[in-house]
Structure formats: C-alpha cells, structure tokens
Length: 585
Image 1 (tube, rainbow, N blue to C red):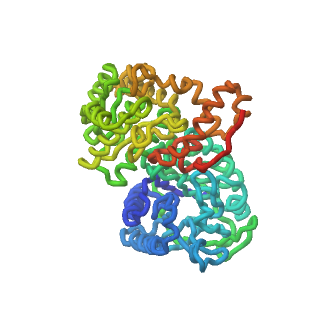
Image 2 (cartoon, rainbow, N blue to C red):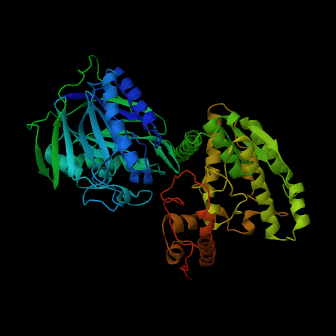
Image 3 (spheres, rainbow, N blue to C red):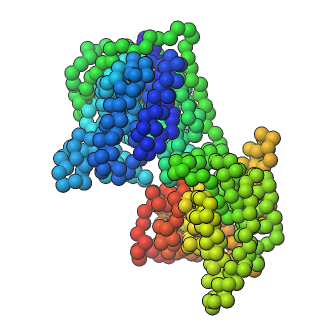
C-alpha cells in the first residue's frame, strides 16, 4: 500500500487579510516541506478568513480572493515548494451574487477548496452541503456544488470536501465511496462549542465508514468576533481508528504517515456517483517518500470542560483585541466574581502590562470588596487604579431629583462614563463583565455596567463562572503559581452593591435554581410546560420567563462576546424585540 506523509496545518487566519493569510500558507508549507510532507492541508476559507459574511457580496473582494489564490500558487513555486501539493480554502464565484439582479440559477459565490501544484491551480471543489442554522447563513451567501473533486496523488485517489459535507450523510462522502477513493480531505472552519470535541470524533468515524476511506480532518484555530475555533484536527481510518489528533486552541502542524490503498481505476474524465458528478485530476509528481522510520503525529486527549472553556475564552479575547489592533484593555474591578474572572482571563490573554483594572467605589461599596479588588490586582500584576465615584454621583443628585432604582442605575452609569473616558483618553478597549445569566434576565444597567466593546463571559452562565474561577486557581496551584482570583471573590454572596446590604438573591432566584431554568429555556427552547415537567417550580419559572422575555432590547445592545455554548445570545438566538408572545401559566 502507498504511504503518504500528510501535514495538517491548524493555523489562525484573519478575515480580510488576504496577503497575511497567504503568507501563513507559505510559511507553514515550508515547515511541512521540512518535515517531509507529501500533501499539505489548510482550513476552510483559509485565504479570506472565515466567516466573511456580507463581504461575499462585494465583487471586488471575490476577485481579490481569486487573484490571491493564483498568486499563492505562483509564490509557492517561487519558494521552491511547487512539487508539494497544497489544499487551501478560499472564496470563489462562477456567477454574480445571488442577491443581485443579474443572478443566474445554479451559479454564484462558492465556498471553495483548491489544490495547488507547480505554480498552478490543479483542481477546485465547491462545498456541497451548506449549513443554515445557528451561526451559519451559508444559503444566504453561497451556491452549492454538485461535483466531487478527486485528485490522484502519489498513486492514491484523494477526494476534497469542506466542513458541513462531513456533518450530513450522503452527498460527497457517499460519492467518495462509489468512486473508490483512499483518502477524503475535509477542511474546516468549525466553531467551538463546549463538548463539541466529543461529538466530532464519532462523526468523523461515521463518515470514514460511509466513504470506506481514511479522513484527514483539519480545522482552523483562532477568534473571529464572537466565534472561536479550537482546531482538534485528526486523521481517522475507515474502521474508525484514530491515528492522530492535534491539541486544541493552539497553532499546530500535525504530520503523520498514512498507509492508503492504491488507486485502481484509470484516472481522467468524469463519472456519476450518488447523484454527484465526479471530476478526476492527477498530480504528476510529488516529493519522494522520506527515508527512515514512519512519522506519527501523536494523539492529544481532550481536556476537562473548565480547562477547555478557559482556553476558548482566552483565545477569543486575545484575537479580538489583537486582530482589531487594540493596545490594551480596561475593566471595572468590583471585587466580585465576574470582574475577577474577566480580569484573570485578560491577563492570561494579553499579559498584565496590557490590562488596566479600575476600582470604582461608591458609598455602598464594602470594605471587603475594595480589598478583594486590590488583592486581585496584586496577584495578577495588572495596572490597578482607584477612581471613587461618589463625588460625581453627588453632583448628579444635586441637580436631579432621583430615588430608588434610578439612583442605583446612576451609580452604574457613572462607572461606565469613567471607563469610556479612560478608553477615549488612553486607547483601551473596555471589557464589560456581565455573565450570561444576568444578560438573560436583564440584570444589568443599560449604558452602565453593560458598557464596553467586548464581553469575554457573555456566553458563560453564572454557575460556570464560579467553576472557572475554582479551576483557574487550582491550575495555578498545580503549576506552583499564585492563584489569580481571591478566595473571598469566589466565596462571598454576589451583589451589585448599589444600595445598602443589596444581594443578587433579593431580585433573582439563587443561581443554582436560576441557571437550569435558563439553560432549558434559552439553550433548549423548552416552553413553560416543559420546564415545569422537568421539575422546576411553576411560580419561579413564570418569574424567570417574564424577566427573559422583557430583556430582549437590552441583549440586542450588548457587546459581542466569545461563543462557547450551543446557543449564544446574538448570533444563535434571534428573537424580535417587539413581541407579545408569552409562555402563559
């Protein structure tokens, strides 16, 4: 049986940076060549970054992607890498955008993969299955391909597929089986969700069995607005054996020698398999098989849930800050658990010299909260400042007649003004610190504690915030480092401290009660009856659902934040603000 040395390039592209992404391909192809690779794979939409959203409709951007692909093929040959076949994702089009007046049936923008060799684009493949759920709107942007591309490389027939093709039965993988291919390449821009890695491996195994072929699955890493990609690239045999698996949340070149069946058919021309045309191509020569023992990429086992989420949040925050060219971040440090976790995430993502934490005490701020904020600053080494807000609050109250919740919200809004002023003056990105539970029930002050450009824990339930804090401290202890989060911040009852003796539990059920209801309603789309049948108290359910339904206008104005769940506010869960439907008791 022939052996191919595969190199799966798990890299971090940036949307719109065609030149920078092409340079990534060139540098990682050089690394692959130095490792003796005979076929190099890059992720979905590698050249343009992913997802490009409405950039698809700009014909100038499509043309730039096509030109960048041709230039990349030439540059790889100019680098002395022309003999090494490279599969790369890019944006293509064979007709006007579907939203234009001159659109043509069956033609338009394409989510595409290309195989580059000896300075040329040898073969192209257009994604067949287009996802149109959750964060994906690919039916809005792309036209589905109906042809499976098979390339003979080193005596092995290799089929090209893209991301969603793997998630649905039939189509390209069924056609690959009928075509008798030995290897199916699947290039991905598959966003992270908690426990998605547990789903991915069984799924790859099912498709490997369906195609009766080995699957090389490569996924990108990195943050793109709300999305974060974790990698988790792998190679799986037709009988389900996991040959090698890459680590999550880091760039990685996964190199592995794979024995594959020799092609038996005569290459060339087209055929029909499972309703798809099969187009055959041949790569005449590739680098020779390296001498010496077989190379194995190793198998990285997935980490615990809290570690996985922490790494996702760190990567999402780091890339949002760096890719948008912010020099630093600023956040309010209350001494509570949410701001403590956000500060620890920011320090892990950017380093303490790029994080400013501001204590903003009022007359209701407890001494222990001030001490906890200072303690966190000392533990993490961030730039710590104290800006008392009471004189500014008093100035407002001297000119406005306010009472009750208006005074509480005034304090939060003064804090927001100070943070935004520091942002304007010094160039920081303001991080807001509200968790998903608070966002769900509207437990925040609009233009107050909700102010900011990015929210690292937007998709993190309050109970998970506590778990993350405990995990991060335990992880520090295991490594012999200082725990970043004060134990007082973890252990004390949560409070906004906007009035004397205030606690979250004055307005909300305990989070151990609240979060399961929210998870069922928001993530699971359960109605009132389903929640009550699940064992939740009907009166509590009615209260929580009323809070969630009336807070949509706040959520619509909230900052973006890294998605880690199956249904994040914003990209996933889209409900009308003006909406009289209610789950009645």
